[in-house]
Every structure is written in C-alpha cells, then in structure tokens.
Image 1 (tube, rainbow over the protein chains, first blue to last red):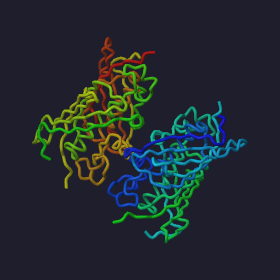
Image 2 (cartoon, rainbow over the protein chains, first blue to last red):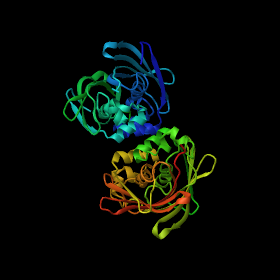
Image 3 (cartoon, chains in turn brown, blue, cyan, yellow):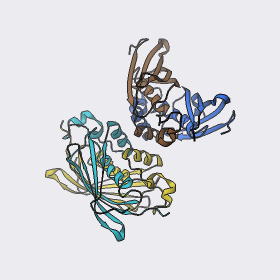
Image 4 (cartoon, each protein chain N blue to C red):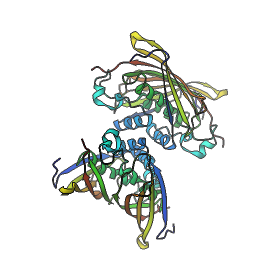
Length: 135
Length: 135
Length: 135
Length: 135
C-alpha cells in the first residue's frame, strides 16, 4: 500500500425495494418512510426513501474492500444527510484521502455520496487506521 | 410528542454470525475481519467483529421507531468507534435528547452504544428534524 | 374465492447474485455451485446457478399471496429440477388449478417454472387446503 | 466419497422471527401467517409459522454441504408438510441414503424433518446425482 493524499475510489450502487426491506429487518429500523408507499406520499419526501445507514454502509464497503482495504480499522465516521435517496436511484460514493499521518498509520478521508443528478446526498468524512494482519 | 431534554430510550441487540454475513452481502462490505475466523485471528481484534455500520444502524432504529419516532428526518450522525463489537455480544444503544430547538423542530441527541461490560463501543451524536406526515 | 379448475396465476422473477448470496446465508446451503464463479466453471453447469429452493419458493409465494392466497395451508409440494436457473435469468412460475375437492377445501395444482427460453426448469405439483382465518 | 445405503446426516436449526421476515422478502411469500401475530392468532395454527420452503431449504443444505456434499446435482425433492413449525422451535433434519444406483451416480434419500417433540414436520424424499467438478 502506497497511498498518497488525493487518491480516490468511486463505487456506484442502486438500492431496490427488496434491499431496503431486508435492511429494515436487519437493522430493526422499520420507519414507514422506508417501507410504506402510502405513508411516504404524505411526507416531505413524497416517496419511500432508502435508509441513510444503508447508503452510508457503501462508504464502509469502499474503506474495507478497496482503499485502503483489508486491514482498515474504522476510527470514526461523520455523515450529514443532505438529500434523500430514492428507491432505484443510483448512488455514487467517492472516497478521497485528505491527510495521512504516516507514523500512526492514520488516514483521514472525505466520504461523499451523490445521486444520479450529481447532487450530494451524504457529505461525510472518516478516519481509519491501517493495521494489516500479522503474517 | 412532548419530548424534553434528558428524555432517553434504550434498546439492546445481539448480532449473530448470520446477521453479519447478511449485512456483508447487503452493504457489499466483505472485509474478512467480519467474515473469516482464520483471518481475524491474526488481526488486532483476534476474532471476527460486527460491522460498525450494522451496530450504528441500531441508533437509526431508535430514532425512527421510538424517539422521536415516525416523522424523524435524519440530518446528521457522527460516530467514533471506540471498541470492537464481537459476534453474539449484546449491545445496548442509549439515545438521549441533549437539546431541542422548538421553532425549527430540531433535536440534538447523544447516541452511545455499550458492550456487555458497559464499555462504550460507539460514541456518537445525531441531529434530527421532526416532521410528521401531513394528514 | 370462487376458483375453478383451469384457473391460472403467473409470476416472474429474476435472481441476482446478491439474492443468491443472501439465500445461501439464510438456508445455510453454501454449495459453491451457487457462490463461487471459479468452482462453477468446472461443473457441468459452467456458471453459478440459483438454489432450486429459492426458485421453488416462488411457487410458495404464488400460493400464499395470489391463488388461492391468504388461508392457504400447504400440504405438499413435489419438484423435479429439470434445468439449472442462472443468475440474472428471468423465471416464470405458472400455477394452475388441476382439481378441486370442494367438501375438503382441497386444491391440487400444477406448479411449473420456466426459463427465459420457455424451457421448463421446475416441473412440480402441490396440494393445498384453503382455511381462511376465522373472523 | 464412499457412501452406502443407511448413511445418515443430521442437522438442527431454529428459525427466528427475523429469519422468517428476511425469507418473506427474498421469496416474496408474504402470507401473513408467517408475519402477522394478530392474523395468525385467528388461523388454525394460532401463532406465526415458519415458511415450509425455509424449513425445506435445510434439506438442500444437508445435501449440498454434507452428504453427498459439493458435486450434488438436485434432481427432485418431494415434501409433505405434516405439521407447522413455529418461530424459535428447533427443527432436526435427517437425511438418509435409501438407494444408490452406482452406474448412474444416483442417490435416493429420505429427507425428514422433526420438531422438538420429535414429531415429523416434513416427510420427504430426494434424488440427487453426484457429479464432482472436473479437476
């Protein structure tokens, strides 16, 4: 691993009704704004929206699978939910290295997610420590 | 809803290997520290750990299901991951109202999660806006 | 409910890699022919296939949701797996009433599933008893 | 593999409400007898029951994971649902080799599942062909 400030990874994912329903069961977050069309029609969102934590977990996937990948230890994650994500709408998650503290193996990253109109939906940042497993 | 500063909700949940495997599929976060016993034995954690975002989603469940409940709009969530959560270990999530801005229907909450030894595993805080659906 | 012999319901569904992975966790059926591309390339199927029980559960969904619907009590199901179902291939499930024994509220149904080339993949039949819940 | 008639494998599993809800999403079988306590109270079962296809998939798991294991090609499965399986009730699945046709690598198996009172819940039989992947 020889990452440097400015390195970037991009991942896209679209969430189906089925995935949102499965996440509602696993997370126990059964807020009807995620599950119930009729209820959601009367909210400010007008339609069912994807759980913020399901979208946010895509950030975790980039950090754990790609950059820096296996050996990442998650120290913190902040997220501002700027706009809703609707069912069947593609989300693009962009993770970029903002700062490296080499003597501590600490990486500070921006972790932003965008909708298909390129509007930000989650503005976030994360701190991870890179500790690959001993051989 | 007549919440006041200091109101508190507590929820407990234990995560099984099966739930972690399902979350790995849904989130696409397949970091082997969540899935692979042999790999995890060589990490600083020594054993498989639960995804931080799966534990964190319990906070979302409390906000969406209980306090303030339906009508919650998630504005932000910050989480510091202080300790790992292991499989089959009970997590207690405590959400407490720290500040209310009534003219904006804004609630600021502390959102901390503890392990079975009452050690903090996620130290967090959230901001939500309460907008119940129109009748 | 006034079903008669010859009544038919048709449902279509396509299974993604993600759904097959989730079913592998839930069913505990982790046969690599469902999960592992490299392994599957060396099998008679050449590619990963969907679990027969996941495809078959679509029959259960038709019986429980549609015809005869709520109140169905499943007495038996036989399935012959005639051809594999591949990932991302649409399956059409056709349930048809073959015989009714009105005094026992028993329905005998053919339950066949087809691939996108209209070749049969599951040839099956079921027996259900219709007992709607008491008011 | 040197199986002979009479060889047997036994697997146990208990199904939680969460697992039944996840299976309802994946299978699309949302019959309320699996999901809704109040509805189920008025049925002949009195309580929510596990989907027959979820219990049955345990048979598939034994065949694919254990006996005969990888290389199993499922040719047919018949199931009679003799009794309901309730949430949080342990199911024991017993697969036994009844007949082997060596020149065709065909195995005929009894596949019965029992509840915690040792009453049969699924009486079944399966036929598989054993075709291990080419090296």
